[in-house]
Image (cartoon, rainbow over all chains, first blue to last red; front, side, top):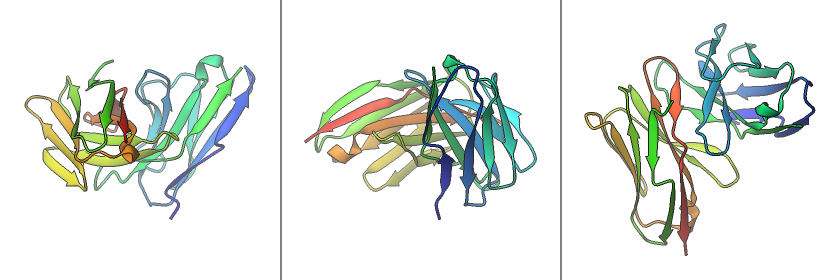
Length: 113
Length: 108
């Protein structure tokens, strides 16, 4: 039982490049989330998927797109990376119907130059 | 938005001390989540609360819904407790709002 996994762990992009961050969970959770963490700020929600087939914007969605590929996988895409997107990205999941406790992946450290 | 305020921002304690970390929020919530972020960056769930008190080992979390306040206590602190402790509140819907964290260092 791996919990929540994320790939890659580290990435360096040039401004304007695109990339997809991958997230998968093996806990049969319904809900999945993408957060970014910046120095001096709390975790901020980018997008979430309450259940398979649905996605919704969070607090800071601009510059990102998401896909809930199936119940296990939720990907985050940066179409044209900007230096302001330099951050640590965390994926999380929760079993919505029973409780909202969130389980986090190990994070992806992204630098955009 | 500043729905969640944590105090103190930084805390240094001697091994064995009793530690309290506070979380205040400004709006009605349906649940409150305490998390621990290790020095390596990983985030682990400690407690989910909607009322009362929960205990797990040396950790105790309490919440007072009327006062919009929660506390996380660590008894007999140990250097391995050194981490950032994060409070998050859940409003109606699916979103959590996170505090900026309390950085705890326990000195042997």
